[in-house]
Length: 102
Image (cartoon, rainbow, N blue to C red):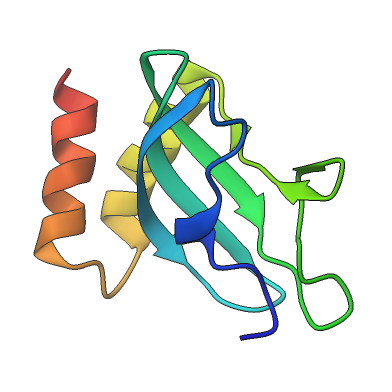
């Protein structure tokens, strides 16, 4: 794999917990996850990177991190994702619906 596996992006460790990657588009594309950021349910996004930049973005001092979407944007994005994204597993769909209901 020539990009950093989003399932392994766990920094900053003091703020990020319970990462559940729901979209991983692969090299030179993006990933989306559900996570807890400072104890609050959140949605994170990142560019995966490629063979020239395997860390991707965002990153902090060479360590891959997540960009946390503001809550109104996160909810709108997830609602749209349920309507448009093909190939989501039932488990991921359930996790997204559960996130939206809380």
